[in-house]
Amino acid sequence: MRETGLRELVRLGANESAFGPSPKAVAAMTAELPRLSWYGDPESLDLRDALAEKHGCAPSQIVVGAGIDDLMGLAVRAFVAPGEPALMARGTYPTFLYHVAGYGGTPVYASYRDDGRPDIEELVAVARGDLARIVYFANPDNPSGHFVPRDEMQRFYDALPHDSLLLLDEAYADFVDEAELLPPVFEDRLIRLRTFSKAYGMAGARIGYALSTESNIRTFGKIRLHYGINRNAQVGALASLQDDAFTENVVGETARAREAYYQLARELGTAAIESRTNFVCLGMESAQRATRVMNELLLRGVWVRKPGAPPLDSYIRVSAGTEPMRRAFAQALRAVLETL
Ligand SMILES: *Cc1c(COP(=O)(O)O)cnc(C)c1O
Image 1 (spheres, rainbow, N blue to C red):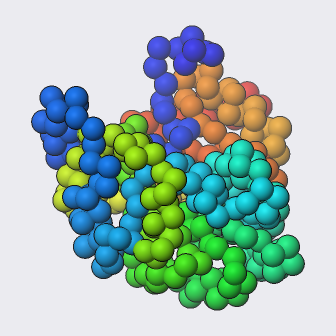
Image 2: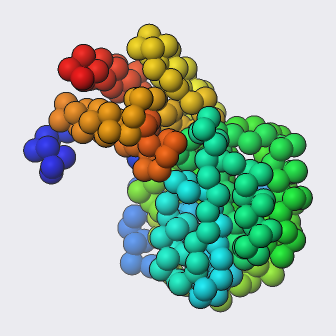
């Protein structure tokens, strides 16, 4: 907004929820505000109890953090010594790389395939060859939106070296059925990351959690910031877990938004990558053209982003919007494409 001097933007660039947080979460957080002078529960016990019930595990197998980005940093700090290899698909969600670089790990890479999917075979080969200490994988993936179904994910997990740790980023898990995800296994070589930022619409509250073994969770406990979780966020997260109807509605609206973007792509004759997330990548033919489209859209008050690394850098990535937001996006995109 500052760059363009606009007073309002159609926010479709950060995969935030266009459908807001649950009204029950807002009410609970509003009621909690007068107690802002108190620290939050350093153990997030009420929330962990509710999450343990949801996931059929013990509270001791859960740690709450200030979003996945926070937990990802703790995982790198805890499990990657300086110089040790940390593996990811080049161009995937970037925060993992930031932490690896920041804590002195050595990033090693696999690629995306030409169809925009992370190359699982290459990830396994590089993990074995480079003895990767930690392997980062997002499922569903950002920025492609691609989802690896349960059987394939299980084969991937089994094929990884058993002394590598799989850091499985499930930021978009709420948009797929639990039965489609890797089964709930609790092993030292698996840490799963979940968030209230996407389907629950609480990105600004900064709250997420990791699921793993009690031993790994104890390790997080040694290094995490004790009072790092906003007490209001704890209360809001707990309330939103109790509002399934709201979350189901968001998931349904999000699926509708994806369909609308596929339909738009068909009308425009551009490629769209099938997504199981709250965003869709639309093909703009070249990286240069995608950058131009993104910048031109911004000048028209529509904020989208684009992936940075090939082969996905020729796409723009647009978040699921409400119907009016989608209409504004479609209108601006048509206008921009006419000028190119
Ligand atoms: C949005 C997103 C995150 C960030 O989650 P927070 O809980 O808000 O930190 C992490 N990973 C992926 C793949 C994401 O798309």
